[in-house]
Amino acid sequence: MTASPFTSIDLWSAIARDPLRVSPTTSVRDAIAQMAEAGTSYVLVVDDSSPQAGKLIGLLTERDLVPLYLQHLQHLQPTPLQQLPIQAVMR
Image 1 (cartoon, one colour):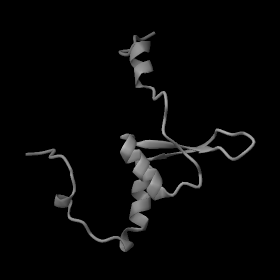
Image 2 (cartoon, one colour):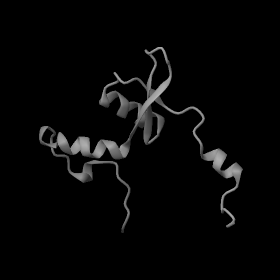
Image 3 (cartoon, helix red, strand yellow):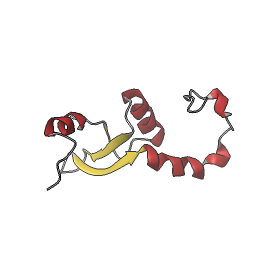
């Protein structure tokens, strides 16, 4: 058995104890805004209206948003990257 570089305490500290949740009727824009405000890259989609309240329906991640953005790209105004708050990777 190979030793893990992580201890159970390391893994436990990486688990979100109160993950961000939204309902299936939440708009994509609102979900993105909540993710940005919370500083998280995902949101749990939870159905609170059914008899099984709190049932996990899905997971929306930043990775899911890129294809969605590309589908609607023709409707958006082009924004030069220099206007975005990006970090310099290479100097």
